[in-house]
Length: 238
Image (cartoon, rainbow, N blue to C red; front, top):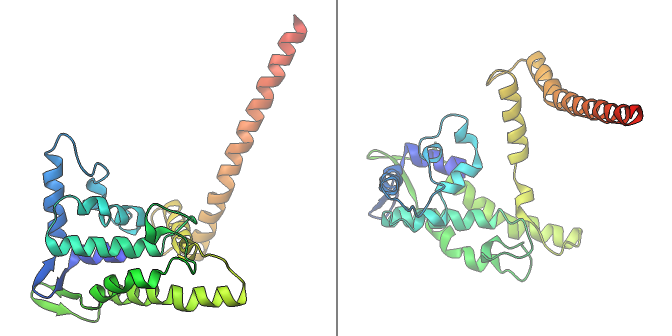
């Protein structure tokens, strides 16, 4: 989702004669700021004008490309664009067996997810990316990547796990790489926001990441023991 959001901030997406761009979302956001009661209160500067660190956060990207934004009277293609990627993200982000959103339920034989995804996949296959009036073909791979991912999960991964491991259902959120990306993001922050840390810098940051919290916990335990000991001494003196 971060790649989709980041590409939308750089380029425009076209479907036939219709165009979706980041400007559509900025216009809607400026309208929202003028309202006393907002329809999308979570929409803020972090989502609309993200810095380099916020660009890596999936949460901020999904809050922009969500169904709440589609209720804000955005441009027609922008509306279709957001709805499509919101439904696709639900498919690959299921975390419970049941959900109020059909596509966010755990993947199993009863969900029939392929039937739901035919229209969004067809829409993505016809999307074209433009930088101004020039079509961008080789640099943006996220729409094709999403099509491959959504097709691969039920056909390849689910069928394999069901036959070889006797899986009854699959929580698709467990298939993402967010934990390792968050880990390396934390390492970068511990190392002074270095994008290319040396092995020694990485080692120091890793030690700091794991050891400092344990020292804080030990400090809290020692303080608790001292407090309890002083209370016992005071009671014994009485």
